[in-house]
Every structure is written in structure tokens, then in C-alpha cells.
Image (cartoon, rainbow, N blue to C red; front, top):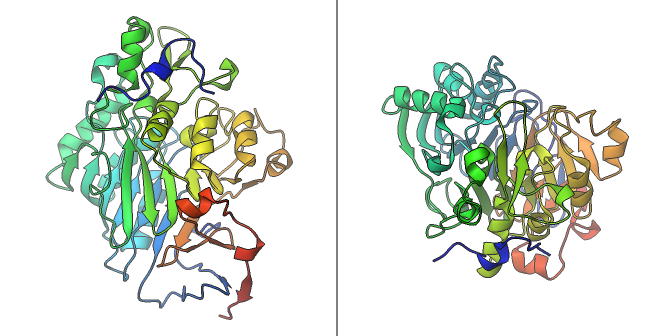
Amino acid sequence: MRSPGWKSWLPTITFGVLLTACSSTGNERLPKFIPQTARVDLDEGDPEKGLELHVLDLGQADSLIVLGPGAPGSRKSLLIDAGETSIRSRKFELVAEKLKVLLGDEPTVDYFVASHFHNDHVGSTENGIAGLLASGIRFGTVIDIHNEAAEYFNEARRSTYDNYVATMAEHVGAEIDLREKPEFGPGQIDLGPGVEVHILTFGGRVAAADTGVLHAVDELYPDRYESAPPSENDLSIGLKIEYGPFEFFTAGDLTGAEDSWGGTRLYTPRSYSGDNSQTYTNVESWMVNYWDEQERVHDVEVYRANHHGSHHSSTPELIEHLDPEFVIYSCGGKYGHPTKPVAERISETARQFVTSSLSSRTWSNAGSFAALNGQVVADDIVIYVEPSGEWYWINDEVHRSFGNAEEAAGADIDEEHTEWIFEED
């Protein structure tokens, strides 16, 4: 198979949850409002749990904890990223504390996925994933892209990658059982009965036989990456978690194209001071183009926004395809995130939540974000999906999950699916 969408990428062509602000202990806040049509026991004593996703409030850094369904003590766990806000920050301590609350005092995380090699996702030599290991957190399987697409990079600029590889070399076979490269499709990550974790992109590729969008850029513009290597963001692992009709999409800092181009291009040049120019390669639209060719539908309930809501991500094509009901930004008040064009675009289809704070560069006050169906949660965001997958709790609300066929027929969140009764303690 050649790279998907090859002709549509020729130059000059334009492409036409259970969620609440949780306290620091994590599990003790449980829903008080339950839909009349889906009475389920969500009390602490319930022997069987549904799917849980904890988007942690780490400021301008990322970490997501996922617990599979099942009885307490038997649930499978997945940690996606363990980011830091600087090379000296200690956000890993918050992640470790949360893991111990959810998994016990000496936790083993079944799977760790490093979406890509940036400090705000994996940390440095003494924090991030290295800090978690030093804190006594053990891991079953670590999944990262290894040296995928290394031929396009200047190795001298990849200090975070080098630090990460050194951490893996020290701990694999001891505190880490296995280190693997991602595999496309479901099956590599097992979170228990009824859950499928689909790996949809990594290394700028979208299928096992795909040579990738970085390869396409290199063929069309042979000198492009020589002067401005691709961003680590381009290599992000993207995955979708399904539990019954409930769907959640997350893809690290996956790149799209800058809005100012007036359309979706193959790449966006980025210039920095010194010899630090780089290229943002449009993996998002490459991926969506492949989905369209394969007639795949990924209509999700919740989208954890790529690259903190950067204007280089969340392209119109991606938002149209995912059509989320809720979008979560991991933002700590920096870099203009989430950017206004992205928030305006998403407001047409979804409500929007920020984990920590808005950037004053873009938002003079929270009211302008609220006008776009936005809310600053300023805390961890927790998504709980009840055991059938048909209902999820989000910000003290319960909403219905819809399958792709229902959503294609126009089903969406409305008053019919938000009827409440009060459950006494």
C-alpha cells in the first residue's frame, strides 16, 4: 500500500465521560445524579466498576490515567504520559500520589504510553517517568515509538529522547517488565472485558503499510527536513479507547496545520532564534484522509485536544470527523493555549474544559472562553463510564453515549438524555 491520500497531498492542493473537578484523593467523589433510564449503582461499595479516565491537572503538562472495568484490585491500568512543566519541576509527585490512591501504596501500572519525547509529556532525567520509577512505581509494558523516523531528525537536538532512552536502559528488566513499539489496531493494550484500545497513528504513519506523511514531505520537498527537521509532535502516538458506545480520542501533541494558511497544507514551517527551525507536519489531515478512504468512522464522546489546543492542531477535518461532545485541554496559562481559532471551531460541536488555566495572551478573561461553551475546571478532570458503556458522568451531569450509527443519524446530547433523580447518601 502506498501512503494514503497521495494525490490529495500534491503541492498547492487545499483540503476542502464522567467528568468533574475532583479532590486530591481521586475516587471518593461519586455521582449523585443518575438518569432515570439508566439506574446504576455508582457507590464506593459497588463490586464492579466501569471505565475511568483521569486527566490530571499538571499545568502546561500532560498525564492521563485510565482504569479498566472490573472489581477493585483486579482492574487493568494505563498511564499515558507523565509530563513536567520544566526540567526541574516535580509534577511526577502528583502523578505518583494519584496512582497510589487509585492502585494502592505499591502500584504496578500495567501499561505506560509515551506519546512523544517532549519534557511536558515524559519529563527529564530526574522527573517525569524517571521520577515515577524513583518513587516506587512499577510498570508492566512501556510503549513508545523507539527510534521511529530517526532518519529525519538531527540527533544533537533530541536531548529529551536521549534522556528517555537512558531511563529505559536502566529500568527495563527491573522496574519495567517490557518495552515495546506500538502496533496499529486493537489488541496490544488490554484493559479488560469490553474495552478496546485502538492505536491509530504513530511516527507520522496511520497504518502498518503506510510509509507516512514525513516520507511524503521528504519525497516532494527533499531539502525540507535538512534545514528544518520535523517536530517531535509529528511522531505522537494517537489512540482511541472504546467501551460499548463510548469513545475517547487522545493523541499527545499530534500536529495539523496553522490556521493562517487559509487551508490545510502538508506542513507548516516554524522559525526560531538560532539554528532551531523546525517543521510541523500535518499528520492530522493525513490520518483523517486515510479514515475517509477506508470509510472508518471515529465519532467520539470526548476528545482530549491535541497539543493543548495549539493553532497547529485540531484541524477542521479532524474536528468534523471526531464530532466530539466534550473537549479537554491540558493547559497551564502558556503559549496562547487554547488558541481562539481552535476554541471557536470546537464550540460549534462541543463543550470545552481546561484543566488548569487559560493563557492571558489569548484570553483577557474567562468570560470570553465561557461564551464559547468553555469552562476552566482548575482541577483534575475525571471521566466515569458505567459498566454498559451507555452512560457517562461529566461535570455533575450524566449523558448518554451514542454509537457511530446513532450519531450519524443525528443523535446527540439533549434534554431527553439528561433527566435526573437525586440519590440520597
